[in-house]
Image 1: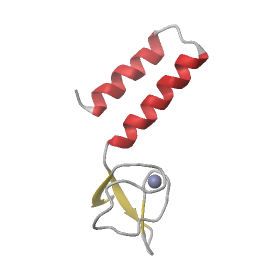
Image 2: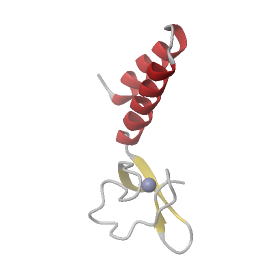
Image 3: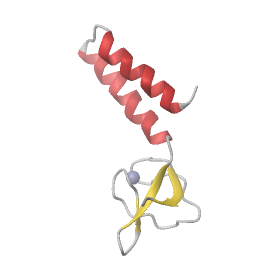
Length: 80
Ligand SMILES: [Zn+2]
């Protein structure tokens, strides 16, 4: 199962199941955490490379695979 498929199943569960506040929160956390595992292309703001999720500067572009600030998995390609 891919991360995208897992997110889809979780999203369907959120929409269909009877939710308590606790279940809703737990599923929201799982969804956000899974989304960060899908590599996102980095951005360039004209001055530095930045995380597409949180906007944190990426210092070492050759070795960073995750954002140090938010944990977003990074793809070392520029977002167009
Ligand atoms: Zn980040």
